[in-house]
Length: 174
Image (tube, rainbow, N blue to C red; front, side, top):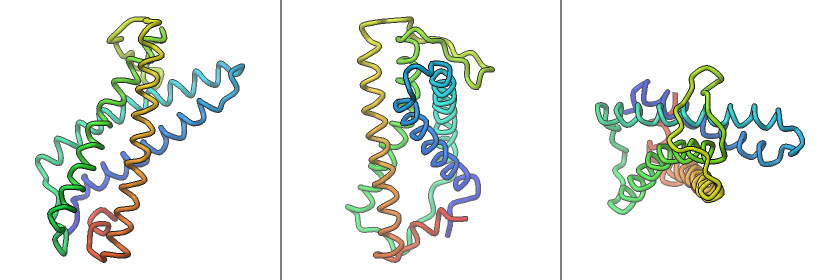
């Protein structure tokens, strides 16, 4: 038994956007400081997809509540089920918290956000020199934590497929 088509679309869409956001974050960090126009464009794309991830994650939670995951065959031992549930819960929490912290960070540094250059996003806080570096650090830490969770998630899916030989990975493939 597999996840339904919408759940699979949301999963792989989220994965693609998260990888894009991580790549943009690295590109922003590595872009030459003198190329301010490029950095501002990259920031806007990064932030716009961050807002998108928040919306998609909220929809995913709504969808998952109405369409529970199919069972894994063979069933997981209790400890493994708890580990998987904890990992997924951490993903959902961080995928909601990270865009909010990112938006607050952008605002604290004194920049407004217009998603994809079209939709103005209200500033939850104004410019704040004291909080800007703190929020930047929190945003970076959450980003690294998300990257680690992605690596753990992919590793676990491959382990389930190739070592345990259950249908965990097949449930989410097209």
